[in-house]
Image (cartoon, rainbow, N blue to C red; front, side):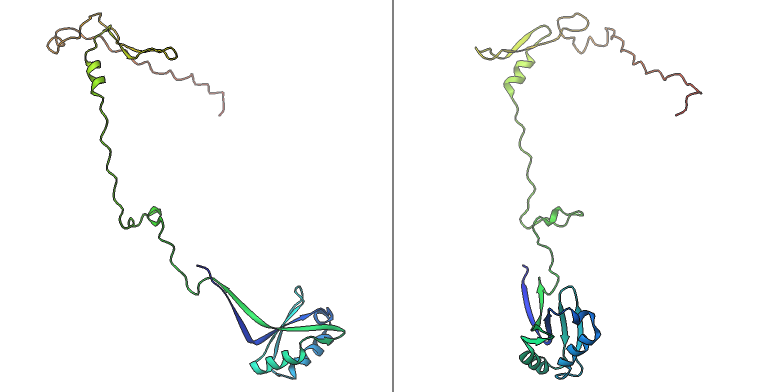
Length: 201
């Protein structure tokens, strides 16, 4: 969980200056710094021209508070000057937190599975014994109607192919050695194109 915290810096003031001469003319900077050096001789300044702000760092918190009390909303070269205590904003946790354990086991390389995880068992295959019995009774040339026709759907019929040797009955295992087997078809390899030395790739 990210937490936004704001802390006030008692040693630092931020001046909102609308007078642009402070950022360009050394004489204006010297007169501006003299206002705060009367409270603390060791004060330091940081100018931010784009934001029209000046960061003023004091060595004593009481001097910073007194300067803010006396110089806030005062006139400087015809423009109002406002002073605020600097604030530091921190978003997040002060230390690095480990990642959330949700679905962490899917990261490669995989870590240990979460607590309570069990491997799912494979479901028992469904065997249609009626269909197997009907197929076992089929012979070459027979047909079997799987789905009866309706007024809106056709029928589904399975036709068993004839035997290649023209025998209507399936051969027994004892006759397989006596009868010659048909030759296997030869696989014709694709011929390589003629080589043309004049053609460059």
